[in-house]
Image 1 (spheres, helix red, strand yellow):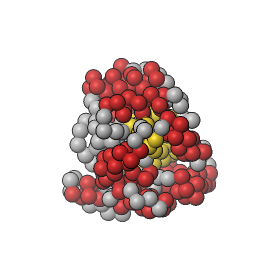
Image 2 (cartoon, one colour; image 1 turned 180 degrees about the vertical axis):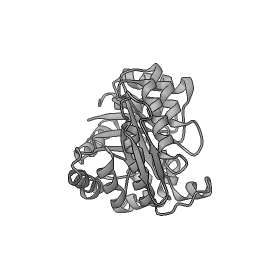
Image 3 (cartoon, one colour; image 1 turned 90 degrees about the vertical axis):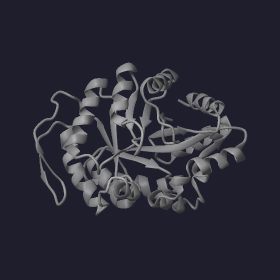
Length: 304
């Protein structure tokens, strides 16, 4: 079972020395990867990973995910390649996503218009740019032209946040896999894995990597943990894309999706994700106290 640490999705973002310290702890404990989101507030994800990666070797570092709308794909590629060159060893994984209409329109003032078209045009520029290939693309809303951005830098792996069928097919055809959130076992089995897998196969691409963010709390007080999860992750039960995933599973809210319980219960639940096609579990540690985080980290470290 491949487990990485996904820090920040539970509401707290680290930067500077605190981030370096946590990535170091994850690397020493044997976790294969460390992921951070790019929120509408807080530090820039790629810049943060550049800092951490210069200090901490031998662990994959990834974004989960950087929104596409505010950054031209050539600018995204340039920053990602810069980060990759700084941390070295082909360790960077670039996760990108469409974000959500309330943020895109309400905060950035950008029309959330035809998001699938936007994603397709974005990837048509970003993917070759990351490979340092010549780019010559003119779409309906995005244009990209130019030669190699940073010759000699290994391309980051490219993952696309995808939940619905159109985005999953796009990720299968044009990226290395997908980053999931609030996606349950039955949805993985009947929807996510077969849709993205078939699209990749038809495009002649390798089997896509499935990365799944999963909230995890190791505790003896499951009721209290569920109550905390309901509060901590409340917004994810309200955003339409995640609400649709929860509804597919018949779950009332994120507290029903979260993995909460003893060490044995956590191990069993996480193994189910691996058994249903998840290649890397991105564990989102949460809890009301520092002891909860420490016990959860210790529990997870025994599974890697």
